[in-house]
Image (cartoon, rainbow, N blue to C red; front, top):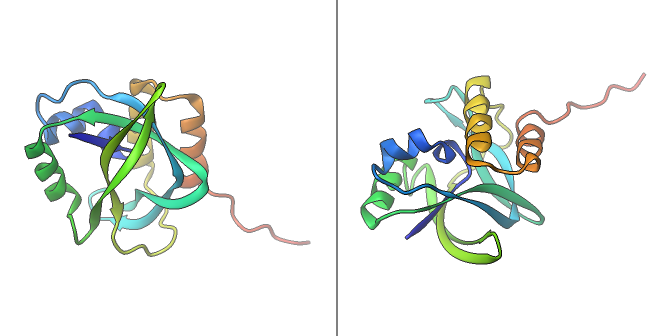
Length: 152
């Protein structure tokens, strides 16, 4: 089974805790969604990553090949189906596409600013996994959107 991670589980250490023995992940691109921070995480004391449907956008992440019992562990970690819900998606990895399971927030609340610690974990995981520089740009834009302009 394949799992598409766009949040903390891009980090190999976090995946090792959730799914011991999971082989190295591959860079993946999910089209038709955008990255957002639309739910508060007590664990991270700020917004947590989410994907929202958007036909003009895409999200970078990591595709992990995992056994079924790992998905059950991820269900527990993600609070499926109450906090995040499992969803089937198709992700591009190199020159092919693969079917994956991922998680989306069940009840969105609008933008919730993520903590610096959380954003730093995502940045480090993206770099470690070899995601393209554009992935970092997308993260920055989603995590720190520009404020409203003040007219003079």
